[in-house]
Amino acid sequence: MAGTVMVKAVFVVGFVVAVISVWAAGRVEGAVTCNQVVTAMTPCAGYLIGNAATPAPACCPSIRQLDSQVKATPDRQSVCNCLKTQAKSYGVKLAKAVNLPGLCKVTDLNVPVNPNVDCSKVH
Image (cartoon, rainbow, N blue to C red; front, side, top):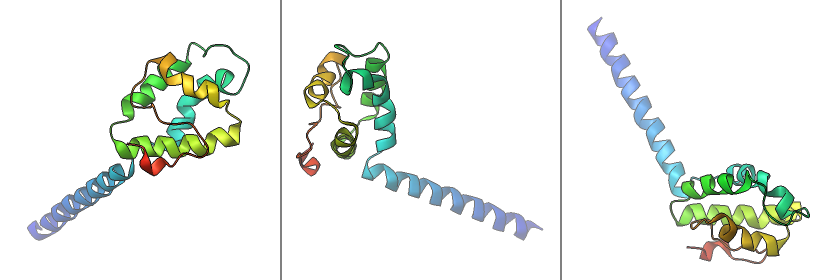
C-alpha cells in the first residue's frame, strides 16, 4: 500500500514539473499572443480602420493592459509580427496606428507598424 502511494506521489511531482517546464519554455518565445493583441486592439477599430478622429474611450485602457504584459524583446517581436500581418489584413490606417502609443501613453508597445518592418530587429 505504501508503495502505491509513493508511486502516485512521484507521478504527481513529475507531472507538475513537466507542466511547469512546458509553461516556462513557452514564455521564452514571447508570452503575448497575436490573439491577445487583436483582442486588445478591437476597441480601437473605429479609430484604426474607421473614420473616428480619436480612439474610443475603451481603446486606451485596453492598449495599456496589453502594454503591461509586454515585458521583454520576445514580447515586442510577437506584437510586431502580429501588427505587421493584421494591419494589412484589416486595412489599418498606418498614420493612425503610429500615433496610438502616444495617444494612449504606452511605452513597451512602441513597435513599428509597417508592413515592411523586420520584427526580428525590434528590441
